[in-house]
Amino acid sequence: KPHADHETGRMTIRVGGERLARLAIPTREAERDRTSGKRSRGPVLRWAGLVWLVAFLVLLANDPGHMFFETKLSVDLDPAGFYASLWHLMDPRNTFGALNNQAIGYAAPMGPFYLAGQLAHVPVWLTERLWLSLIIAVGFAGLVKLAEALDIGSPASRLLAGLVFALWPTFTIVIGSTSSAALPGMLAPWAVLPLTTAVRGPGGVVRAAARSGVVVLCMSGVNATVTLEALLLPGLFILAYARGRRLVSLAACWGVAVVMATAWWALPLLLQGKYAFNFLPYVEQASTTTGTESAAAALRGAGNWTAYLNLGTPWLPAGWA
Image 1 (spheres, one colour):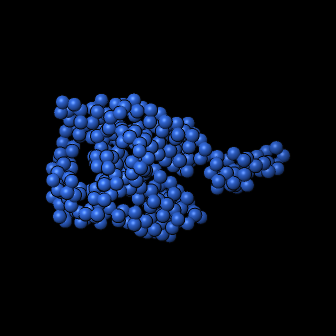
Image 2 (cartoon, helix red, strand yellow; image 1 turned 180 degrees about the vertical axis):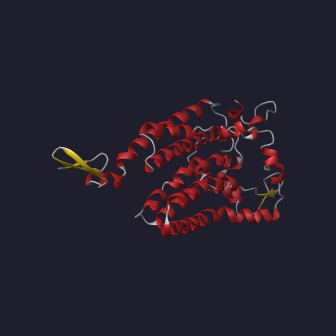
Image 3 (cartoon, helix red, strand yellow; image 1 turned 135 degrees about the vertical axis):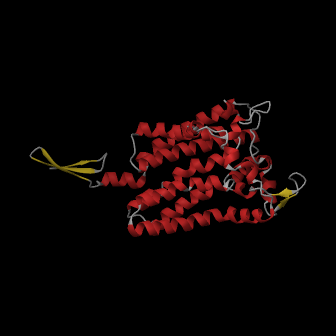
């Protein structure tokens, strides 16, 4: 006597009241729910909306009416003028004329967001809060969705993991001062999510790789190293889960998608590197960034070295606290 379990999509065979086998045969109801995504999408969206609202209110309570310190104030204050300056390697408005330092990376998605706020006449300080709270909510939802796709944990533990991920000290320390540095990490789960169906089959690898590439495009190129580090997660996922020909085809398609998604900022960065002054030895060498950092600080995610600077006031207030 077969009995269909619509919750799990499995078929239980009973003969004379005894259960003989439990087969992983998807029922029509379970297959419909899986393809539509309605059963899982609704709760995640509601929780992500709640996380966004709470984060937005918390950010509003911090210095209302005042702007945060962002790396590229020109993007916040005048996004239209920022886009106009991208057509030239030299920016005459920057310290009496200077080469654009990684400015192209702000062209997406941060630039359009602030441009929309400017066109809608939203105060800059309010647009900043909307942007930061959206990044937190997106990171939360991405990890919850990825845990669901991989069938890891329970619904409650996934929500808890999403909160821990979105509020990880490394993110909270820099999100108010360099939101672009937190963005690739927050989007990393979303870059893996399309690949979960491709490694299992029978989904197409081209579509999955393209969807992951779109997420990589949204990671921006403000800090190339941070974006490359975020790409380790989907790259290792493909190597760990794909097998045989699917491994080769998926890796090749995903590699092409990543190249296409990063070319818009990688090529200008190479052009800048040819003509601009190389300041990296003075700010981003390991001896500079980790010389005063303990292993414990690194493991708990509190190793951002500029958080320890206090020049009358804390350089990064969240990290200092």
